[in-house]
Length: 188
Picture (cartoon, rainbow, N blue to C red):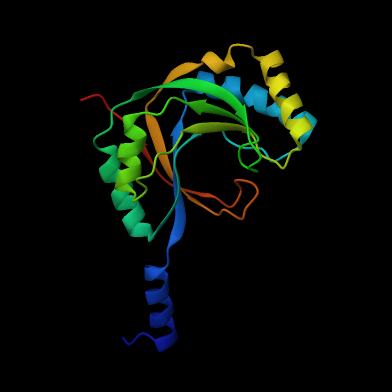
């Protein structure tokens, strides 16, 4: 059976198309519930979309789908569950990080980033809110976090699950983002 030229051309273009991928560390369930309470309180006051708690380990890498999956899996094979320790509670002017927890940099993030072609240093972070906040709003949001959970800046937990997502940087929420696969880290 002969494939029409238009279909063959589309198939080739799709195979060569690069999309944006990110890697997230998923906190344990008890930490997710704790973080979600903070997120809900911040959204109630400052707006913004609902987001799932996650630590951005490797951000915005362009890959073809098959290559992203291959490099993600090969990078995860050499990583054991790891301790995440909050380094700082910060505010930033960036839409995706107006109020975030920054984590201690660690070797596994660089290792995984290297497998995905992102060798520059990346500060793992967990955004508590998305939105374009003014300086005053970010300051109020930071105070609200401290008021609601004064020990959040000393949070420590172990990550044993990482996920690969196809993301769209122009999207202002996670609805169009696609979970590609999850990898459960194991002790050797």
